[in-house]
Image (cartoon, rainbow, N blue to C red):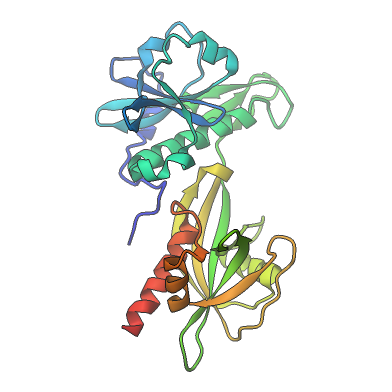
Length: 305
């Protein structure tokens, strides 16, 4: 199965190093971001991720986070403030800050996954500057993988959290004729943008229960025969997306008019032809939504051949 974009099971997170103060060496490199955009060098017509020697920043007080080890390099990350950017301006030469998603077609999956990981850690540090229990300042702990309240009467420890979410392709299999899938549809200039349906898992709810509830809420269908497909880390909303295919027994549906404004049934053949004519634009290529649609369409086209 295709490895989902932003996932990299081969990266060594070296978790055993998180509880130990690490001495800075020549093999330590720093990935820098500012307002959640990462610094890249401009190399002629391509952009190259800047891996700065951590030693360059000894004179600047940065709360960097240890990500792991790659090719004998210990990799760290930090999201700079405006003051930090000014302090290290002499180091930041020959490049600029870019949004990861604007460089999807230029990044290998392993590099995109590393930056998504860094993005998630940096965003978490930004929103946990204060203790959620007493409101006091927090301090980075475990080389950036936990935060500890600095109030000695509290000392609550916080760890990074993600929000589980389900994303679903709804399928109808008639007794005769081609299978159909129901897609969220939005009008654009020269056609439609289509995607699958998704929602966050609530407290006390299983993934399967969330699929059933969300599909009922968004398009008023009762789904059965749920099949788990794959998952994708999604740091942009601090989520983990769990992809499913679910079936319905009839084609009747009703959009909620809020999250979902319009939807339509498509056969695999219709998807292929409409995409070829650029009348239909699928979800972004880095999304599991796109993977679910393309996998379903390709599987059903192959059955027709």
